Length: 244
Image 1: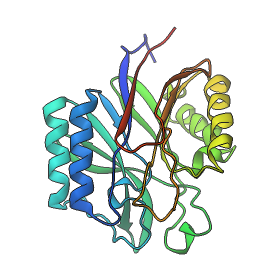
Image 2 (image 1 turned 135 degrees about the vertical axis):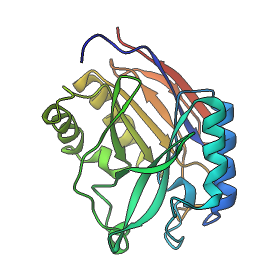
Image 3 (image 1 turned 120 degrees about the vertical axis):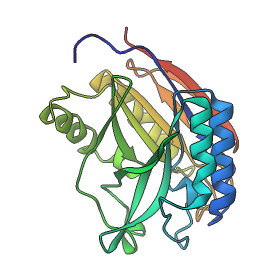
């Protein structure tokens, strides 16, 4: 990469969501995008279905997503939202890239857990999203806790001629039991690769989990917390990612 990109403002949002209610959840996404005022707005795992395993796959052309497209067009934001998607005769836990031009699947979860695997396939491809000169390695929840995922994503970036990654971006969901492990793991990734780490995490009721603890956070390349939410839904945390 020649030269350094300009700082990128990123927000991690944990809106109040409703199980399986795509219209309501899409409206909550649009509201969060407008409130965030960030170039990149990241949402939790399966945010559009509120992490409800029984919810149907989300069609990229669903009119419910039009409000998110409009919010991105108004703000100049790019949103990374979570959704179940159906492709090639199977279903995946996916990250959708939404901007003022439309919706596309950006990434599919590589490491679904045992329960998720009863419905969803495991993807094979690592993904690096380029945005304003930034190289963003994508992940979804359990991917970030698998020690091979971050290095494999960085290696994919090198093989692809990108040279590496500048940030590691994930939508996630944590219970009280899993959060302490997350809090140890994410700073290790940030320090180990000298990159920013961003996680948007599910908060409040509405998912298949009785307790989803929020705590969306952003870590700087030295492993320090740049911004962190509490456990309540509706929180948005933001940081300006830069170099040096």
